Length: 166
Image (cartoon, rainbow, N blue to C red; front, side):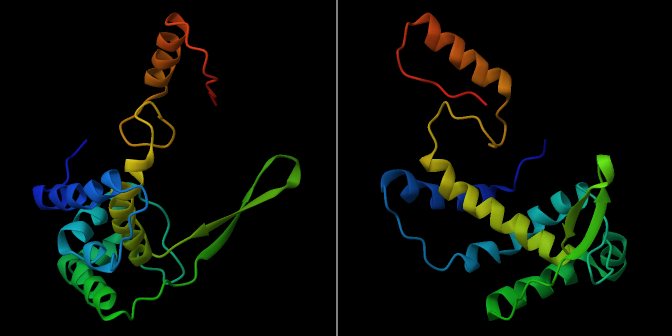
């Protein structure tokens, strides 16, 4: 697992502090942190690592690398800061399931995947503050084994609080 650059870690820490200290914090202007070059640069390899088919525009990560990743990220950053960035329509693909049913899959374009990843990194810092320390669902670096260990420890301490395990 790779770590985010120190400047991105510092940014996430500065966003998370008011979220932890104030129960109803207001965050204005999140496009600035999302559009930072560090945030976009961290989101790009993560989106590439997941691979996937191209979106409606037909652009792949090989096309992006051929044209220059830095230029691609600079274009996204300029659009975000100017307020002209609009998500493109997703490409719909029907995946066959059992018994003749299909599941519709929406595939975003590479540009939108990078923006989604950058937005996720910033919003994680805000929402992470609201979670209980023992909460494990859909959180980074949390395993179901750790959640089971917490349940076991609570039962051994004869705690009477109801615990929901999914």
